[in-house]
Length: 249
Length: 358
Image 1 (cartoon, rainbow over the protein chains, first blue to last red):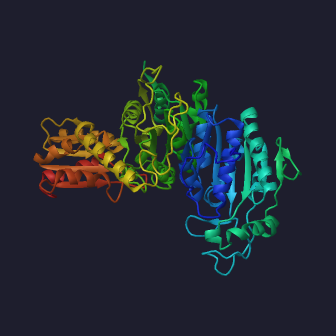
Image 2: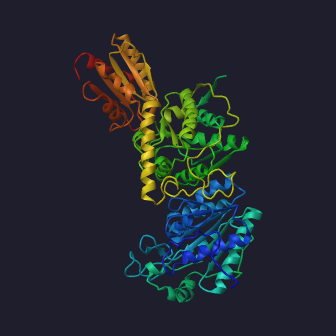
């Protein structure tokens, strides 16, 4: 029988470290598919952060580094200056990039460092057991907001898009085939402009943590479509360094 | 040829001549001239200068530069050093080399102090692992120690610290700078390089909390790293400790002090000698490793006075550990940005000699 689909060769031959239904496994798999399709594995460096997302660094047959919580962009800034030929993708969560590391995120974006940030936004801290994060939705119950979160969530992609230096800023989702294709296209574009123009790009990806959010894997798609996307519109915010009104292409 | 230079600038120029490839920093008094000097000189040399958004940022950029295999450095003062604790803890555990210059100040005051001693000598942050710490007492020695710091950092793959204070950083003195190292020796890492797809690549690796070699999330690897490091520090104590003895040949009383305080105490030694009291100065140049043997050898004297710019005493506790309780020891400290007075120090030793204090 002809094999028409399989795991990317860039992933180690081992079980994923993630829970059933976790979106990190899915998003990272898609990232590495893009790297494989673009044939840039030799130059590629995976910048890992702290949180469940950081476990990705152990699962790849790629150059990778891990950092302290939130500091991925600072370490990446130095790496990219010293090795401009590398293609650097930072993979962070919302707790990492939007809370403890928001300053690092914005300063790296404002410097326009030539790397691509993929921020998986599952609206809580997964690894530590489901506490509220800056992107937790109003009313959402977490272990630190048991009566429901008060106040609005932070829209990080929109925030990054207010800066002049970022070349490409978008929010994607991966909860259905249509969105998966959009995300892969967006990431391909971001990595391409990184290589061609030395451009900074930021892609937020909507996610769910079934273990900590209490939203079961089979309900994740509906949650993202009907709830998360109300607060976090899936679209492009900047393209070619200019504001973009487009839906993610 | 000697030049008259500010301490901060002499350190910066020496670092460049020692093969510095990457500097990142954040403005803080009394260190800022070092940052400013680097901002114009490093790009002239075709090397990289980054002004970070904070000391958290600069210390993490330093980590990135070290991972990437560059000879790297940052400089700061106490408040900034506190912000660097997390990165330093990781670099020391993961054995990532760098040079850190700490121009100490008195907490919120921008005047000189020696209040960071415990921070840099007792183990960084949450890992408790050490750096190689040098404490110069003149501008010339600050330059010499900077060169030595680069040598030790890249010999042992550790953070090396030049522990100065605002007095040395800010004052101008004649200084002979070292010759430029044209091609610094390639950095050799103890860390296995990830996948090795690019053999030319220096050292991208999975660093995490201390590196793949040094742990990450594995308890066994973390313990192994700590054990390796402890053995290294033990070796340093035996082979790398430096201490200057000034007028100690026939001394009956010793002042033990380091950095700016020790420099001030040179006057005290002369005052006491003029009064007929045989006093000398023992001055640790490395404060980690602490010169235990050299200070321990003072046990036969009639008395020791420890002088430092910190209260409660920090340095004096290390001295007391080496001396034991068999010898009279006094401490004289000033802090808050106030300098020790050589006459007040002399008065304490005079009283010890007269049997008025013990």
